[in-house]
Length: 345
Image (tube, rainbow, N blue to C red; front, side, top):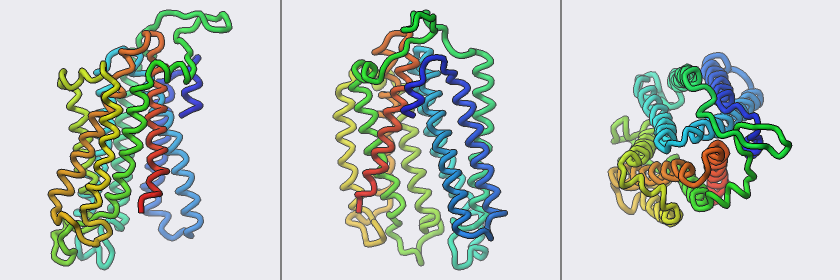
């Protein structure tokens, strides 16, 4: 992301988006096939295969984040960025639904002593769904580029080397000076957000597994918790369609304090059934609705407002660079949060 943000002059952001989707299609297709043909390979070989897939997925994510936000911000309308943020949230909801359905579709007698989550049929359906969504996205971006080309034409600026260029090249320092409140807010927002996968994987239903309905057993309950968080995230991003709530884009300073307030969700997670040790508040409704849903809601709203804001604080010829920079800060927050999550016991 850092390198892509620096490479502004002559960059084709639609090409970066298309390349990322092609990488994703290849990665998810290989993962789907691996659930059928790689079951007998050695652990070392499969680990090497997974590391290659992770590398390809990371590269695809970097290309997509950089390309999408730069391309959309160039149009100068925050609503378009809001649409991208909403699309990302939908992409978070669909895999959860697919995983729950794939687990429930495996008969309990077929699961035997293992969970449905471990079924090759379940994994195959999950990765196949991701492949299909990536193919649809690639087709959509090709149609969009065909209609609108590289994006809105910019005022021609004189480059440092005397050559004409259609975009203004800015240093990261200059971009941070123009967008420091928004950049800090989105960085902290997504850094705090990365605590939720740690707890979600470790919190179980308060109902004993032997007595709980199948939806409340770990194989389904964990993706169900992810579904509640991602649904809240989607709703939060849709809240920015309400004009009074969207007005926060012109008041970025309070966003930093809102993101800091999200640290209060950490003790709320501790009140739930972590590692099956028992919950201080023995209620799945409290965990799913109050903790997961609201945490996701706050992430969706604050994150979307931050990413919609740059068009109000930079010149038209600086929009692509600003969108790319905000994508960098978003990924930086995710990376920092991921590293800090290892400190959570």
